[in-house]
Length: 255
Image (cartoon, rainbow, N blue to C red; front, side):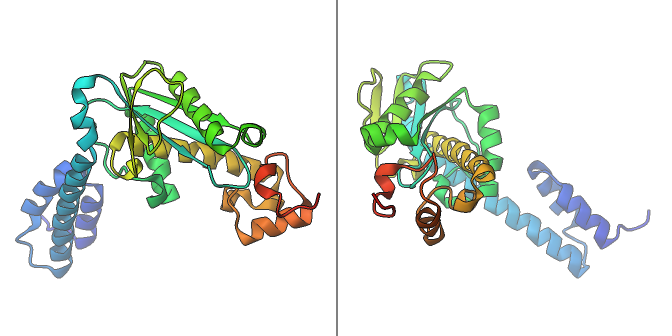
């Protein structure tokens, strides 16, 4: 039987699922060609990296294990408290017990591409998800903190099933009749909150990119409504758009 070329083996390595990597190593570990040796080493490194990631995800499930006996656990997080424009968006996610979706983290620590990938996995595997939001007018009317609470309550109300306990990123939400556990830095400590962070972030970013199509002068696709120098300059030049938070930009516009 003709020996496979290094190019053919490289394609085999690229196509190998995680569970196939040990057999790939066993199959080619005695091949003396330098190119194959490198591929076997890469396969070993990938296995090690996956083991480390699984261990990290297991640590990220600390609170889920702690409150496992309480029933359905829901993670809550928000994005968009600081921008000058656009809504504040809250996500609520109930994951299946012992969920092991890899690479979950605080959404701010993930690339846009990775967030999009994880969003699809979360939406597919979650028991239930809910999104709530408060627009710029509402933020101006009741202030950003109260608007954030309102968005969180809406996200909870949109869940297809009612959770028994809420794991929140740092806050305790008023007027919610469900047990709450506020966790400082929760989006990096709880897999439930981390997934809620990703769902909220992707939802809001997609909205801001849509706004950019009709209001390109503000650069919403790149700044997502945050106060970059270019964004502030655009506000001064063009004035506020319909999605700007007037209470946030009063220093940049004339009376």
